Figure (cartoon, rainbow, N blue to C red):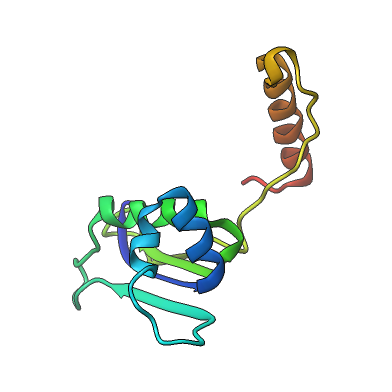
Length: 137
């Protein structure tokens, strides 16, 4: 998406706060400000100014998306609206429902590390499984 018009997300505050503060992530800075007691979920929407050619700053928006990915399961809703070029229609991407993952069991090798060959084999296996299942477009 070359032009981003809007990003909206909902986060479980206790989960995001604990995970982010422990890892020192920048989204934790947003969530560490004093909040009223009893808040369970925070919903944030950022939109570009009115007008067909307006857009959010790409670098800042991608930084927020990266932070949301790191927070993981604490993100309850995340939607990005934008388009590849000015001539394309606006499209929505749901970053939560379209997220895919797979757990793979690996055995620890020497020095309590996973071998590179085992990691690549697991990655190839997972990618092939997603392709067979049609999970990747």
